[in-house]
Image (tube, rainbow, N blue to C red; front, side, top):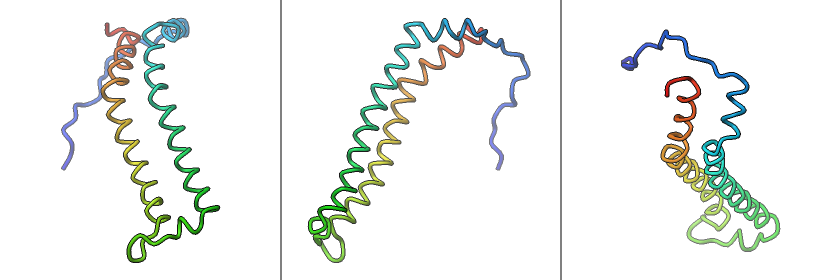
Length: 118
């Protein structure tokens, strides 16, 4: 079953000049877009790296703790390992929602204006 997407547009888009790129890069609107991205991505990246390093350090230096059985053959290390995957997927989902709500509309407005659509 083929997707019902419209064919690509054959109209020529206006390509921005290097001066226009520089002007947009220095604009307050682009600065806000960049701040919005950084204020979300950087803290989450740091938090996840700390969480991952905690897992690695505990695995190396706290063997008794990580080897503690919780139930059956499930120990703390296994639960932490699974939580690494869960955390990764949650961060990706959260970023996707943030990008769709905050970043994409701002970026699309800038792109449309630069290509002469506004």
